[in-house]
Length: 139
Image (cartoon, one colour):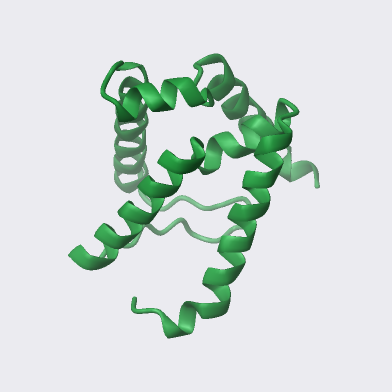
């Protein structure tokens, strides 16, 4: 269990950062969807840049391993427009309706938001449904 402590601390730091950056604020998210503020776009663009740089570093350093000793492999995604479009629309509609994406759900639960518990239950149910019907869906 101790070997998972770095992940716990990274998650706590991530959640704390989301709350302090107001990325869990429904009002900030609505400002973004109404193009009234650059705040959330700045957070998203910095996350994209961080992810891109991190992947490039992992690829250039060479073989790295996870905590359980398995090699970290970043597969090249197959091109596809329909799957990415459908997934993006589903994610965007859910984000717009609920006002939270998956990361902030956990941060809001950590702050004691009862409404976020309902959203988390719905997200977990949706994940379960996907797993149940995955073999019948186009991939």
